[in-house]
Image 1 (tube, rainbow, N blue to C red):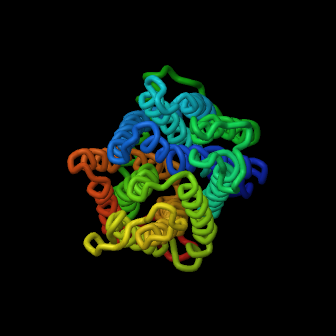
Image 2 (image 1 turned 180 degrees about the horizontal axis):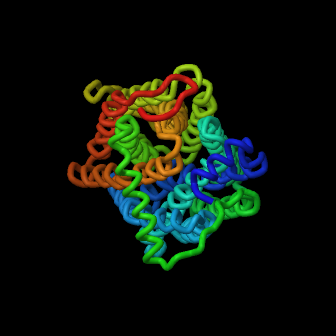
Image 3 (image 1 turned 90 degrees about the vertical axis):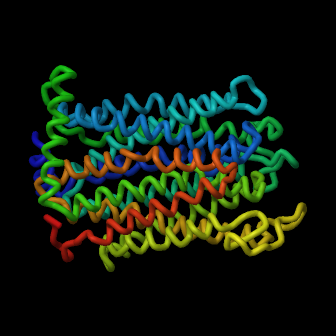
Length: 471
């Protein structure tokens, strides 16, 4: 069955069924603990503060690891996607790249402070985990057009993002309330000892987030393999021919871009602001923890709050998209992210707005009692509200401006451009952090990517409600 036939069948049949769609959505729930715990809220700060012992050096090393994973994605995604397109298979590739995800996350348990090769174990485990998580997500996204009719892709996209964010809220809340404990008093955010007899002095709660993410992924990805229909398999050609045929399709799709200038412009814009998002999530917690010397309690409250606001934003993204339009929502979110990311960079331990001195956090003071901490938290929560609608409306906008007969191919380009240069922002942050020995200098590059993405997005023409096609 051709891609067009699959889309047509999905249109006439009204989709692949609730069980299949629900199982596909569960994939976002499966990967979310890795993104929430390992990529964003728990492990980056633990790595910088406890394993490396230096926030600046930790941010630089984490940035280099994130950038290296981005390079691997940029080099591998086109070829692997081409082979998958040539054979019609998605699930085998999701299975293959689930292995490094699970293995990489699980090995983070062994990255204990003071252990031999702890820095290397942490970076290798993170590299393998993020590589597996991102590659499996690429192939999972490619299954989306076969599940629902094209005019329901936006709703499916938003539901997936919202389900992932709500999963993040649950997991982050559970981890900080029941597992991660402050070494100073040995108690979790609820004021109780951690479950399973975990040793706070050895940071076993922080390290357990790796194996926990691995087990969670395995449990919640099973429905995808059982209930989500695979595209009809074609006769599998030799590997060389599969690569040649798949890359030929990519070239043919790229050749159609001049006839759809809005889609081409959007894909480049999305590539730029996606780079900024990758860096913001991968390094934001390290930045905040390094500036204010936050411990597990502050990081727990920060992670729970940001996850909750992200879920709220993702849930609200669909209705905003329907009322205001995909481009308007995406552009509005980028404007907010530009302002807020500049605000984040301008906040330091003893200053705000780059130059205005304020009292720094005092030992023994109530949580988030200093002005810089409160402003940093406020900016971060606004980021959480903005990212969900941006991601959801981006996928919907592409569905609305792409030619219907090339919808699946354009979603393939969307996945590709979203990862193609994802190494650039993290590596730039790492280099500037090393060069200036300053977290702020490195983090200052993020707003540039949002500004560039917004400038390109501004020229995209979105069709009126109910219409799709060339833009």
